[in-house]
Length: 152
Image (tube, rainbow, N blue to C red; front, side, top):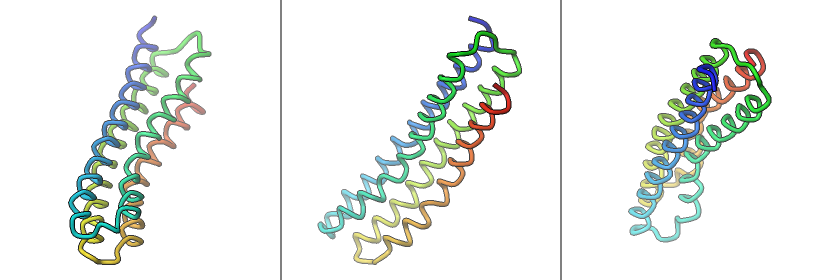
C-alpha cells in the first residue's frame, strides 16, 4: 500500500470516527436533559426523543462520506499524493465539523428539552434553531462529494 492510499484511509477513518463520536456525545447530552426534564413533566418524552435524535445525523454524514469514498477508492489502482491528501483533508474536515456541530447542536437541543420539561411550548422553535448547526455538517458532507467528483 502506498502513502497516498494510507493518507486517504486515515482521513476516512477520522471522518467516520470523529463524526460518530460527536453524535454519541450529542445524543447523550440530549438524553441526559430528557431524563432530568421527565422528573418535572413525564408526558414530554415523545417530543424530547425527537430533539435528542438531531445530533445523530452527523454520524450518518460521516458514515455516508466514508462509504462513498470507500467505494470510489476500492476501484482505484493508482492514487497520487495530491489525491490522497485531498481525501485526507476532506475526511478531517467532515470529521471535525461533525464532531463540533453535533456537540453544539446537542447543547442547543438540551436547553430546549429543559424548557419543555418546565412547561414551555418551545418544541418547534428548538427544532428550527437546532437545524442551524446541522447546516455546517451538511456543507462538510457536500465537500466530500466535490472531492469525489473533482479529485478522484
